[in-house]
Image (cartoon, rainbow, N blue to C red; front, side, top):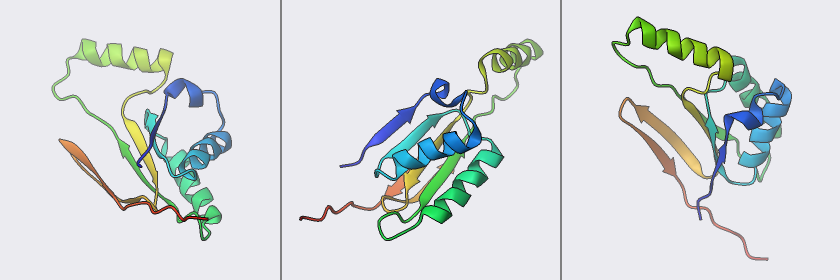
Amino acid sequence: MLTLQFVPYFELQNLDVDSKVDKLLDIAKTNKIVLVEGKLRPEEESYLIQKTMMSIDKKFKGVEICGVDYKRKNEQFIDVLKTSLARLLLGNREGFTIIGPASIVREIRRDPNKIELLTSSVKKRRK
């Protein structure tokens, strides 16, 4: 079974980088695909990759990560101003980030019109 876990922006907005990355990595380690509201900043993404590399073992093979941002074309000045004000007041919630355990997510492909999440089957071992 494939499980997605949505993490809303407000759950991460007041966390420092270390706590934020730990929270997201802990979810990914439970074989869930994490869908985060808003894009991670470049330093958060690189720290996530760094912590992932330190966490790799026989059970946890790493993560696949993809940040998706959308750009509006031909926006008028007033719309740009409104968006900037909203971002200032509410935080940057535009776009989203997908983080999936490498044992499930083989590859994430994106283009302007779609995202393809290529997965491999998860086999549970019987005890």
